[in-house]
Amino acid sequence: MKDKLNYAYILLCKDDTLYTGWTNDLEARICAHNAGMGAKYTRMRLPVKLVHNEVFDTKSEALKREYEIKKLSRQNKLKLIEK
Image 1 (cartoon, rainbow, N blue to C red):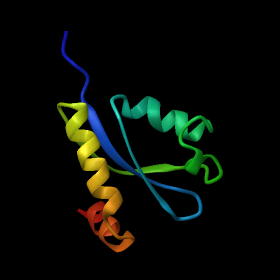
Image 2 (image 1 turned 90 degrees about the vertical axis):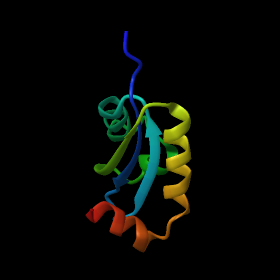
Image 3 (image 1 turned 60 degrees about the vertical axis):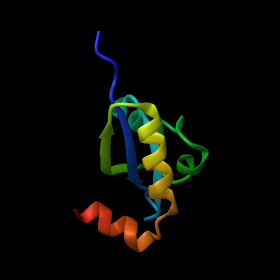
Image 4 (image 1 turned 60 degrees about the horizontal axis):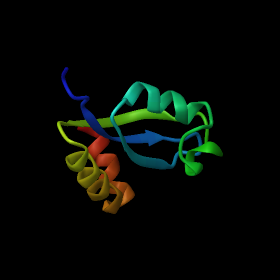
């Protein structure tokens, strides 16, 4: 059995803010966010839309990238999304 892939992702919230997270099931995680069962931050900013994701083989790599993205300014996050 192949291990699941891991993802670092950015969501665009209804209020035009950005949320960054990680998961090993991207589709289910986006559904959870939009059902109000994701992060507390996104619950009051629904609906959310996936605008960027990166794929990693390990959870550790995805968590590291999530942390790197979270440290970026909004301007740099927007540049990342445009690529």
